Image 1 (cartoon, rainbow, N blue to C red):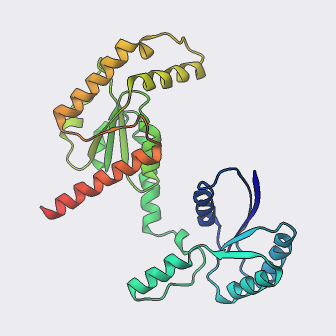
Image 2 (tube, rainbow, N blue to C red):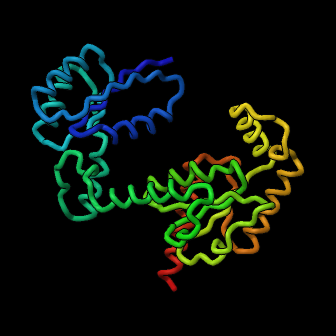
Image 3 (cartoon, rainbow, N blue to C red):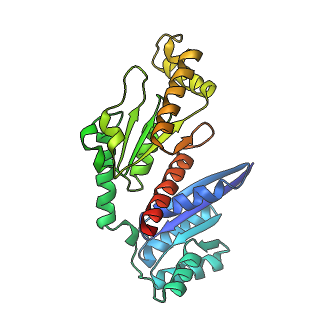
Length: 274
């Protein structure tokens, strides 16, 4: 097991660095990464105090600093102290600058500004929470995506993930004994997406759910024939209405959400072409 002190040094919150570090560390096995976050470093005095601490626990410094003087001080002092430092965003910013033909704005934390996109994302999250599990069907037309599927096909977590990407999402559980509201079949704006899964995997997930709730482990909820009937009912509904279907059996929430985003993009592109 390799041990690494990873110092994340930023003139903003450091959230971007944490995401980058997590993604990069996932490519390595048997590494114990001790992460040290140093946010809001915007003066040479603050930088010196941080470097004194880093020198006591040497490792890799990953940084995002837009102030050229602070950057220069960091790079020079890291070299003198034998500390390896890497700018996390420089290659991408340089490439964008070349392609766009303009200089980057040197503003710390600019990506966290409370702009229109931020408020749109907050609105999407509020809408999605208010339209979980079949609630609020009267205004589903305002949604960007409506997810349909039997119980425990990851509708809610996928909805929340998409909401954080700015999509207004509603979701509805499909139950053979209780047909969905008629307006589901008349929606124009939202993309309705069906979620399905392997019956054996679904039964396993449902059993775990029942155990967590201390409920009886043997009910129709986990009966093989009943589950098969539920999934068949959902598949017929998807096919009859021409809705795209995603099998979530071997997909993470992120992978399912990405597939839905791609479907939305393809629909948008097709509408533009038309």
